[in-house]
Amino acid sequence: MRKFINTEKSGLFDVLAHIAYALEPLIQEERAGRAIAVISTIFNSNPPVFLSFVLAHYVCVGVKALDQTKLRPLLNLKDGSILDAMADLGKPDEIYQVLTGFQKDLYPLPAVA
Image (cartoon, rainbow, N blue to C red; front, top):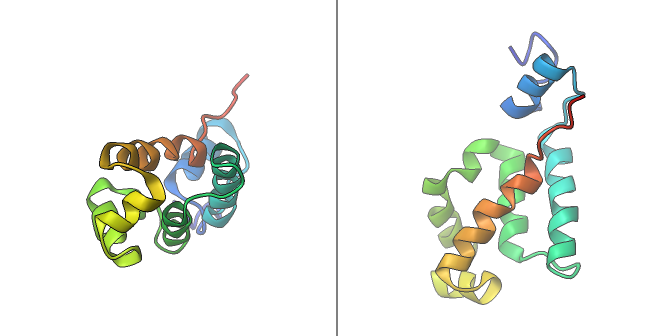
């Protein structure tokens, strides 16, 4: 489907939004850039290193990088331990909230008339 409508660098969200609402699809890099801009306002212009890492991984791999089962291995890959991640993002429940919460900035609902 992505090849048919020339959205090969876009995720499924953009493909479906394009088909359903005729919205211009974003490539994953653009979507990640917009999310980082929003996240930067939340974290006083300094997004957590781990979130930047996850978004960079998202650009390369796609939405699979955001799967909850992938986040712990990403924590280990990036920071080496949960303690390092806690220094960057806070307590484990706060880390979970940040990681799941920023996805609403990555995939904002389209305004449909």
